[in-house]
Amino acid sequence: MSVEGITAFVTGASRGIGREIAVEFAERGADVALAARSDGIEETAALIDDSDAEGEALAVTTDVSDEDSVRGSIERAADYFGGIDCLVNNAGIVGPIEPFDRIDADDWDRVQEVNLRGPFLCAKHAADYLRGSERASIVNVASIGGKRPYPNRSPYAASKMGLIGLTRTLAFELGDDDVTVNAVCPGAVQGERINEVIAAQAELAQEGVRTVNTDPDSIALDDLFVEPERVAEQVVFLASDAGRQTTAQDINVDSGAAWY
Image (tube, rainbow, N blue to C red; front, side):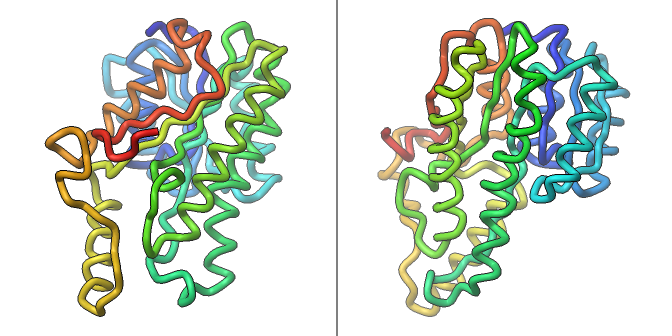
């Protein structure tokens, strides 16, 4: 899983899965541009700089839903590192957790802006740099929410299914330039975010609203909750030499919660 010497642009790198992805790249010798709106990217950069990681980190404040912000951040990272070899579209928001007919249209739009427009804008402005790389890849962090019912999370599920569709399309549009494009689809990932989702679903259940099935018998492995490090390792594999002939795929990291 060699990524030594490449430059990865990782969105949503301020915490959670994004931070784990950035650290995994740096530990394996890749330079990493850390993109997010919050100052958590500075903490991620410090974590990498203070470790034994061979890769260098650069924090670039970015709003992935704003085209000017995306363009500026990608140009800054490419100028600083001399190019971009891998784009990881990880930034995303949970959005409202409500039955679909109780969701405000503006809240729906905001989820699509971050979770789907964001990856499109990042791919658009990274494309020329990727085409100029000999080891180019895009890895989109989608979700099994785009593959199986996610009750009370319709904006999120729609955005992640859209991201899988974008992944497959970009894989063919960029294939002639030897750019691989894949999606990683996590299940329930350990951390604060999934705890908040579970609490919100529990409140809806008390109202008598039907919620997602978390019966252990519905998954293949004993543990429903996925360690964020496992997601990061899959992302890095797809960007590595070992993943050069894997493209147009959506790969689950979910303990067997989705079976296609």
